[in-house]
Length: 342
Image (cartoon, rainbow, N blue to C red; front, side, top):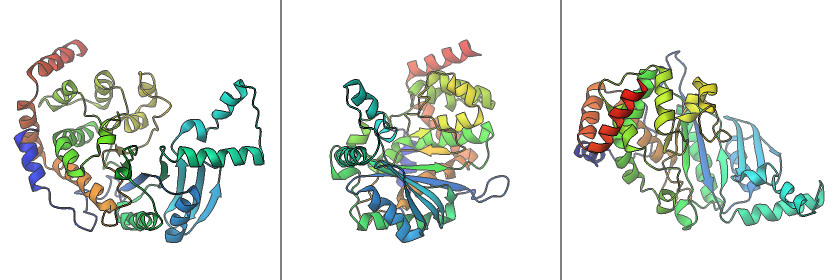
């Protein structure tokens, strides 16, 4: 971790009990910026998860299956609770059973089987609560749902060595211009090690692909002082160096919102990339079973990224410092790639 990144980490204040304001609270069209929260957890039935939302925010539960349920019309919009296993949510397991000559169709037999599958899968596969995009000023209300889930027994990342559970933020950008997006990416890359330490990211999550660091040659590439791409070049470079959504700050969803055809033509996880105008921040643990933990801790870590991105001179100095500690051969490789692609 370069000295400046370490010093930035040391100056990060202990997270206060309130949600820090971003340096830019509104988009360029003067709307309050919105944030979507995703929480992974175990220890609860799907009815308890949706019930916690209704208890705090109201709304009506609409059950789709044993694996998926919705809360419609809450005070903050619609929520979705689901078992994070596509083969169950899509009922793809029925195809595998059919190949074995087992047809279960619809009705009580299927419902009973899915209830059992849900309980068994829930031992290792998290349930996920996905919230709607809400104004960042409403995050304390979402935190009330988090507290309710804690009260009724939700279990988080550190409850088991098998639980690689995360909390995810989908943060609306201030604007969609390449220069601004690049500043945010650079700020995150500078602060990655400090955020990893601050969040005390669980070993089980470090072993998954979801929070792996960006490749060093890409870091060197985007840190260059003369790197000022337009949005097409920015997307193309990303797809060249790191064509995956499995990063602690996933840009593919945002890039797919800007140019879906370009992203989907690349060798990426097409079925998992959901185009949306949001920074998909995936680094934090979900410590939902710790009464003293709040969503503000992860949010305030993200705000450190935004503050650095909003300070051009500080960011420039931090990038220069990061480059000074980059691998020499990675820097050479990055420069070679730049020349070949230009």
